[in-house]
Length: 125
Image (cartoon, rainbow, N blue to C red):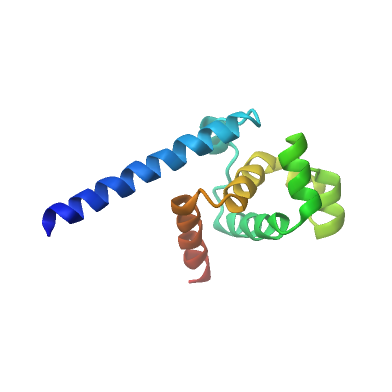
């Protein structure tokens, strides 16, 4: 029984590493590194929550996701008009928002999405 738990744990860890590598490669296609992501991620919990909520809304918007997937662009003006978010805010957190959208719209990021959901639960407390 103990060995099967260890194997499952190792497989999960391998899958998590694969997700991180895939995300790193996908972010690179947007000229975003993990170092950039760390540098341009909010520290404030409220800001993280607001940006995550915005990203969830943007993922449901076909025009926005097409712009990101096809042109590798986050359409700041359109997001501002459609969602009432100030352009300055979108520009400041553009890298972070882009990463969130990529994660949320891809089925392959199971563990990373799970982590984001755990953050949401923390925000609700």
